[in-house]
Length: 94
Image (tube, rainbow, N blue to C red; front, top):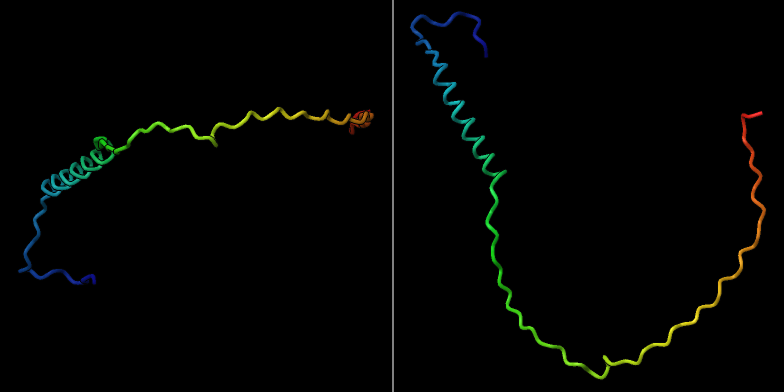
């Protein structure tokens, strides 16, 4: 609520410390900027993951040795019927 009357005479006056306010603001801005720069430019180290795996040769089985499949003979394609090209009509030209 705004006061429409003047403040009392014995009310203490606020000192204007604009330099201190500007320094605090610049320090906070620098801290925020450095945190943002760190978060956007930091690359975490790659973690080495060891997965235990045993490499075993696969034994050939009787089901794997199949007879070669003879090639399939394809029938020739049916002939394409000959058709006259459509008549070309250009509108707007005389």
